[in-house]
Length: 355
Ligand code: AHM
Ligand code: MG
Image (tube, rainbow, N blue to C red):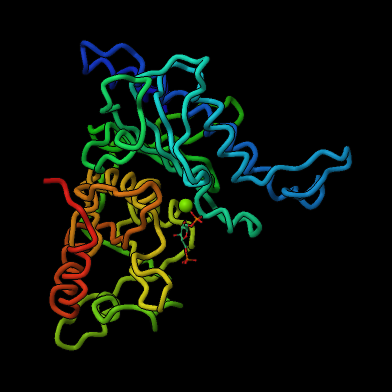
């Protein structure tokens, strides 16, 4: 297409930086480091199908070397890419129980990074898309050498940027730094992410709903009624039915719904001792995706509160998650008030909000 500009992710990040006259380039370089980590993880996920021939992850290869599990590999790549650059002061990963501190020998920078290195990794064996999710905050502890939990436990609305990489039929990186959402597709032959989706907006006309319907018997009444409604089966509230799509790999489910329009649901589970707050993690999965969805004009809620207003109380805190088209999320909240007011009350007690 003559005349159409080809924009690399680096160019795009630099153009964004130009909006801030006092920017030092630290943040720009951090995003670029993440893009580079994504390329390495992408290379390995693309080779995953060869595991049976070349040696399966978690086993020894013919040289007697231990093959790394892909999620362990992805985790290490991100840590090793970011911990020595002088741009980050502390990190946390869904794979690690504790914060990841920067080794004493390296300089520290202004940014705090939280990530899920390989979300949906149980799908890897079946050649199903997986993803990486990341969040970036500014540090709040005045001395960079004292950074700790208060820097990591910031509410989503304070995010400076968030993004994800989906390792699908192509590898795509989607991110927002607070000025809309842009998507880049990796050209593997040259190893560059090229701008493919300039301004992603959540469509007004949703097409899909995504939920693990196998858990229906454990759902609260509000969720059961909602899914009845969304599939056009509620006689008192007729509507056009949405189609079901559930990959079980949230980045992929989220990505499709972001582009095509829809809602993703991962509700709390009413089983004894099971998942009273659902499965998904607020810090590594829900807050960053909520940020992107809001930047694209959508919404994200735990069924009662805006996800970005929740102040995390612990690193691996879980939350119910309803994310997508604004009207569909609002309707879910309405249903909770109507069908499960006792749950609304219980959740209000559990969750701390930005004051
Ligand atoms: P993970 O972080 O252990 O990979 O789990 C998160 C994944 C999400 O990608 C996905 O939406 C969800 O688990 C699927 O869970 P379920 O099989 O319970 O529907
Ligand atoms: Mg995960």
